[in-house]
Structure formats: structure tokens, C-alpha cells
Image 1 (cartoon, rainbow, N blue to C red):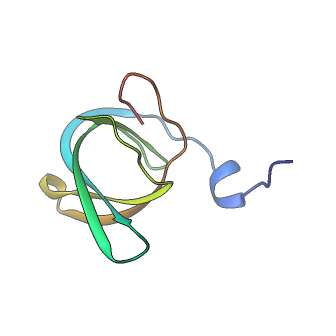
Image 2 (spheres, rainbow, N blue to C red):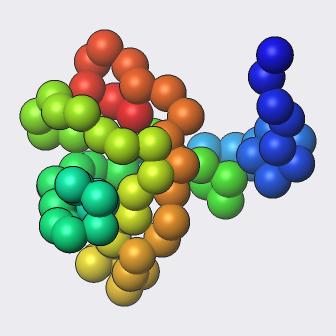
Length: 89
């Protein structure tokens, strides 16, 4: 039985726009003691989501932060919805 969330499940999907911004995924490991960071590339972006390409395959937690230095956007909270086999989340 799936629990429905108003914020994520009922939100309208906005159209994705192509972008190739370099970004960084930041998340905590081992509880709250260590902040880890991985490089990534934002392939497509909208107001309600993003398609992100990662350079290496690793286990990404469900909640993480996205830092986009070229757009001067720091620490946007994100929720992992899907992981595709071709290194795209």
C-alpha cells in the first residue's frame, strides 16, 4: 500500500529544458558524521525535477543536496525518484 504525498505525487510536472550544467551531489554518510560529494551533470531541468547524469555508479541515498556553482545555486534539497541503468537518475 503506497502512501501518497501531496508535495511529490500530486505536483504538476513542468516541461524539461535541456541543460548541460556541471553540478555536485552532496549527502551524509554514516549517520550525520561525514558529508560526501560526487560530481554530476544536469542533463534536463524543470521546476519540479531534474535528470542527472553521474560519472560513476555508486549507491546514492534517497535524500541528497544538489549544488550548481555555475548558476550560483547552493544546497537544493532533492529526493531520489528513479535510478536508470545508464547512470542517469
